[in-house]
Image 1 (cartoon, one colour):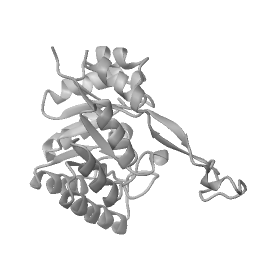
Image 2 (spheres, rainbow, N blue to C red):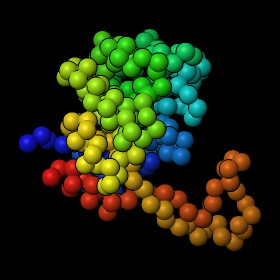
Image 3 (cartoon, helix red, strand yellow):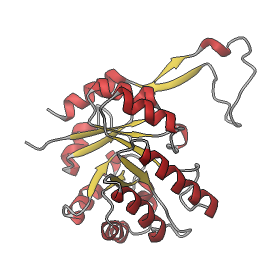
Image 4 (cartoon, rainbow, N blue to C red):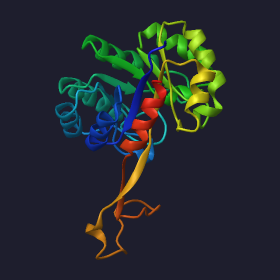
Length: 250
């Protein structure tokens, strides 16, 4: 029977602890999941490693909106990567593209070499889903020694991109790990596994918890023009993740 690895997308230390309780095999640690995940704080990594025994992949993404960064942003990526590795990160998750959407080899190689030199994983994230030619991109990542690539099969939801994911797995031929993710739920899990043939998945299932500390003045907002409600926040849904993990491993 194929061994299934379940990676859980986390937005902070509490999420990692919930994922640990739910039986996850590995986590991807971020901040700001609303924008697709940005670089987490050192504190969140330190607490996550102290409170659990999970391998923690740490996102290296300095801002939302694309993957072609300024020189200063790239310098921040390098510093964050070094600090996270020094403080227990088990892998780096990153993606660097040129303005035309092709892989930035130089920057990808630098982050990959940093991770591998520390004996950790180098993971290219869903930037792969916007490249013009995923086969060429995958070949580049294989050549550079990247450990794994997270992908939805270039679809908004991986359940729509299962055919491409299967093709990616075949094209990789064991030279790089293919990790399907984006939108996997209890309803789509079986079909995604059957149609991709994957031996690992990336899931993100959150629920909302209240925080009443701001209810004295509901006119105040601390975010941008979307004005999200300030009296609630997302946290990993441990029960739902646990049920999905058990099903994935059946």
